[in-house]
Image (cartoon, rainbow, N blue to C red):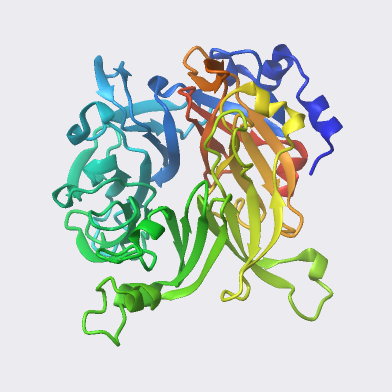
Length: 487
C-alpha cells in the first residue's frame, strides 16, 4: 500500500492541473470542486441523463464497443424522446471512448410504475449461444420484482424485447445474474415466494433467448419452502454468482453475515441422482453440488466472489511446491454513510484446496488519505471488476470504492496486494446528496459514489456513479500501466 504522505501529496493538485492532464475530453464535464488522480486519466464521460447508475458492462458487437448501463429506481427526462422515463438501461456506443454516444434508453419495466429500475445487465452474442441467431446480440436484464427480461440488441439504437421471465411467479426481487454465453445457462438471482430469502438462484437454459427453459431453484439449506430454519436463514441473501469452467462461485450477504460458496456446476445442472426428484429443494439436493461453504463472520459481507485462478506467484518461483495458486477475490459492500458501520474491504482467499479456503491478505484505502469519513456518502468497497479478459485478469483488479472513487490494485502477489492508481471523479450539478442524522438533525453532503466498475479488452475502465453523476471512462497511466503490461 502506498505511504499516506505520498497519497496525500498526489491528490493535492489543483483543478486546473488535473484538467490539463485529462485533456479536452474532460472539459465537457461540469466539474465540481476537483478531480483526484494517481496513475489514472479521464478519457471520456457521459452524464447518463442524470440517472443513478449501478452496473456497466461493455460488449463487443462487430467493430463497435457498446456499453450497457443498469440503473437504480427513479425517473428522469430522456432528451432522445422528449419524455420522462423510468430508470432502466442506458445504451452507449463507446467505440471512441473519448466521445461516448448515448444511443438509446430502455425504460424500466412498466410493471413497476414509479419504482422503475433495471440495475443488472449481461450480454451474449448469438454466434456464441448454442441456439442463438448468428449475427444477433442479446441483453439480459433484471427488472426488480417485475422479473428478468431478454432483449434483442442487434441494433442497439432500436432494441426489441423477446422474452420475459418471472412475473407469473410473483418474484419478490431480482439482482445480479450470470449468463454463460458458450452454453446459454443463466444463473438468475430471484426472490421466489415461499423461500426464506428475498434473493436466491434460479437456473435457466437461455441457449434460445426467445424460449427460456427453467431448470431448478437453488439456495442455502434451510431457505427452502416450509423449512423450520427459514427465520434463521432469511438473512443470507444471495448477491450474485460467477461461473467459470466447472465451478460456480456464490457470494451471499453483501454487508453482514457473508457466505462464500463453491459449487460443482455439472452436479448443480444434473441434480442429485440418488433422489427420486433430483431438483426438489431438500437438504440433500441443495448440499449435493456444494464443494465448500465458508462463513465470513457477522460483520463482513461477500458482495462479490470473483475467482482468480492459476496464479504463478513470482515470490514462490524457487519453491518446489505451491508456486501456482487459485484465489478468490472477495469484496464486501459498504452500506451506511460517513463510516457509521463496519469497514468493508477486499480480501484474497486461497482456494487452491477448494475444500479448505483460507484468507491470506486484504486491501483497503486508508481513510486519512482523503478524509473519506468526513466527505459524505459511503466509504469502503462495493464491488470489483468481473471480466476474465487477459488485459487485466490475474494482474490488476479494479475496485469501486464509493467516495474514494476507482482504485486499481496490483494482485500479481495475492499475498500482498498493492494500490497502483486511483481516480476520484469530481461532483457535478447532477450529483445528489447523502445524509445522516446527527443529534436528531439531518446532515447532508454531496459526494461521489462510484458504484460498479468494468473494463474492456482495450484496457479502458468504466465507472458508474450511484449519486447520479454519470459514467466515467478512464485509463491507467505511468507505472500502473506498466504493472498491467499495457503498451
